[in-house]
Length: 367
Image 1 (tube, helix red, strand yellow):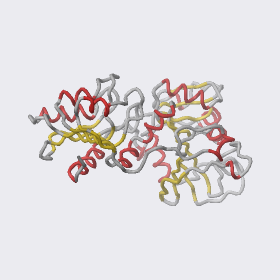
Image 2 (cartoon, helix red, strand yellow; image 1 turned 30 degrees about the horizontal axis):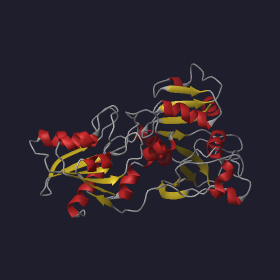
Image 3 (cartoon, helix red, strand yellow; image 1 turned 90 degrees about the horizontal axis):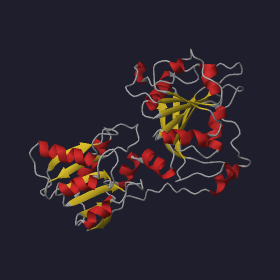
Image 4 (tube, one colour; image 1 turned 180 degrees about the vertical axis):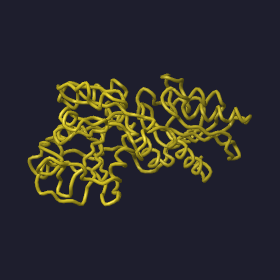
């Protein structure tokens, strides 16, 4: 049984629904559309955050609330239904109890604890198709899936520099290298992550609040404010004011920082610290994505965006893949990714392969 136009359009709808869920939090964004045997929609749902119903139960509940039968339906879901009990029960059991006859999946579940849903459904006689709109579905859960595979938070490193790579002038002045559009974009990014990470040097020198204020308004979600280093944050610091919880990790080891954040169920950490912290994370091979804001200004002197990251020759230099470029006022934002399942020592850059993992938009079909 091959997927047709109806199922494909339903997957596009499920992806749209999934995008309504929060980007932050420990769980992936997932959407589900239930189709009757004649192809009409009987229920829709999406995951709205940790502790709330998953997309599949939400869609089943919506169908029942509307008085529509779920027997013999096709569940079109962006991520493989889970088969374990966490904050909620297994989605596989909900689908089986609902009498679903077929399940169309966008992408497999990367979480070993929750995977196996497709196999469970097949054993129960449900027809399962995996890989419909795989590319789009994988992109939707890219941050979450990378964090699950790596066993640590996904790390986005933010830099904001002049065209010649300077983050401040010779006299130390740095406000503002980038324009208001770039700064607003950075605040919108803050509102989607679970934690913002800076070093004690930045915390003491700049006295930042590290709050998310897109459009100048305080966002409903405020990420953890994480300070790395041994020096204390002063009692009167803005970091101790309104905003996300302040967490101090008294280490200089990026791996220890991420281990502590993983313990707190952080999936996405935004590193905003200065050159020292940025270089430490890059040198340790613990950066998954780079947000590089470039302003059309030349300084010629002053601190650079990065220090020593362990690259002795050009062949050792990490080469992230450019995902997008965006004009932000007079500035340009370059988004680049290190596409690999896990990252090794900084001296091993030249031998790393792109193992990001998601295969082309093909489908695996079994009954």
